[in-house]
Image 1 (cartoon, one colour):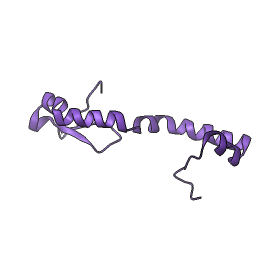
Image 2: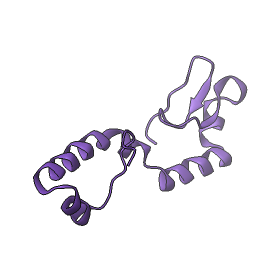
Image 3: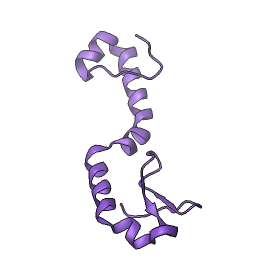
Length: 92
């Protein structure tokens, strides 16, 4: 919430990980698009209910840590210590 990106078509994305747009600078201007009540509501909602930044940044470290625990302690003990983590590639 400390910077803003304006796409070439004027759209203002809430963030790079979500398809949510705050507005368009060509239609309403930057100040209105970024600071409108609707935009503030969206920003508040996602700041409290979204972890995409955390997931994108930390997931690779979580995967490495979890897999290392599995190698050392085994899957059963790791699940008991840390809990189960569903990997995208896992089918079981």
